Figure 1 (cartoon, rainbow, N blue to C red):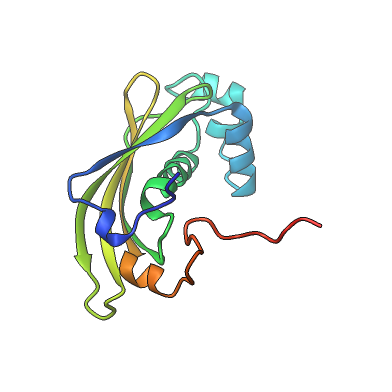
Figure 2 (cartoon, rainbow, N blue to C red):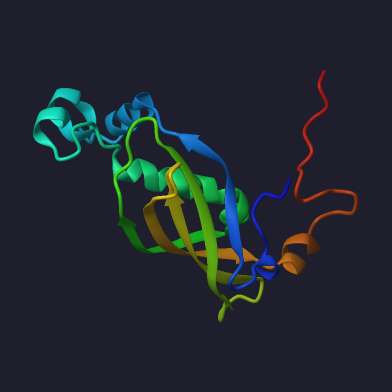
Length: 171
């Protein structure tokens, strides 16, 4: 299985559908909120959400959905990244609730060779997240610096697969 792409492997207009999806549980949402110190009752307090919000139930914290989609895109987009350069835009366009399943896809918007280092390039992508009903819930654009294949594989000794590093023999 491929993990990330070299610069040459990206084509403007290509769409990568990330698999598998992820069903968001109450535990996932609460743990993320607690780890990031976001204790807003809309996310943590079912009674508050039921009585004081327009949704009448807890809403999953948006940064968890963004993080989930970013992670889903790594095997297709940034698995070989030298650097994640920028998140240009991020929009949460619909709420996500406990029990929703999130699916993601990424479109390559642009690519350009580095002007200062010939061994790399910059790829611009847009990732969109959808729930199980096909409703878009999140969309973001980012730029990723990735290596060129000829440079990345030039320093690898013969017989070594740069995609699969060897592990020590068990004793």
